[in-house]
Image (cartoon, rainbow, N blue to C red; front, side, top):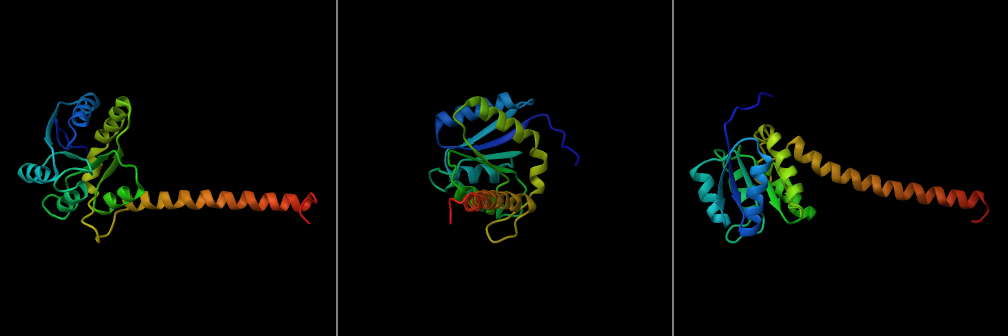
Length: 187
């Protein structure tokens, strides 16, 4: 895939917490090799207004905001044909599987849990920016539309991990029973 040549990153940050917004701004500036033009929305309604006025290269979206929630903003943006190609990375304090699944189901391109360590945030944002040109091609829509291989892989990876974990537990238990039976401990 051919990478887009740009001279700066235009990022829309939807984050109601001033401290988090400052940390994200600083981490983003350190993570990027290019200048970052950052616009900030303090609530979901403002995020919708800003994204309709000018499409960013990337939207960083918190889930818990006043007005429209992050999921409502995500559904709005990915539900509109003219906005759907904007890459949206959910950047939230939530680590709930339901929030991740819903974010991908609504068309989110990436899901990041806010780390406690600013250096980890910087590294996650660096990786995101490095791979950003691949995200617009991942075009899911609002809930109910087909998911792409990327979102299905994420869900299947979680499912596979659960199957492997329980499978391992069953194999170990069976091995212990057989060992106990062969050793004469279990009649």
